[in-house]
Image 1 (tube, rainbow, N blue to C red):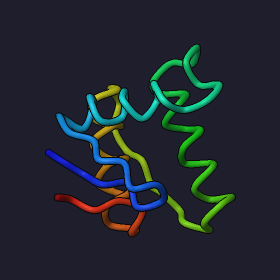
Image 2: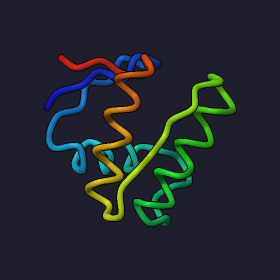
Image 3: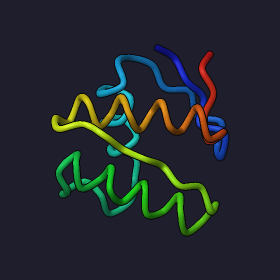
Image 4: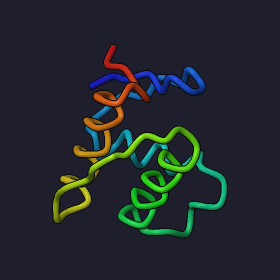
Length: 81
């Protein structure tokens, strides 16, 4: 999968899990958090900064990452390339 983050034009590629890990690697102050904690942080930030509610489902990091990427695309925060 290949997506563009619309806020900054970054293009990320890979599985949803790889994309979310890449997002975390460039997020200031998030390097020491678990992936699940990072996803929770993204959900909170999206709500605060854009009034967009991202609904994340899943038990594993991979399932949550898939839900995050899907929600970002559906809510207009990212687009599939």
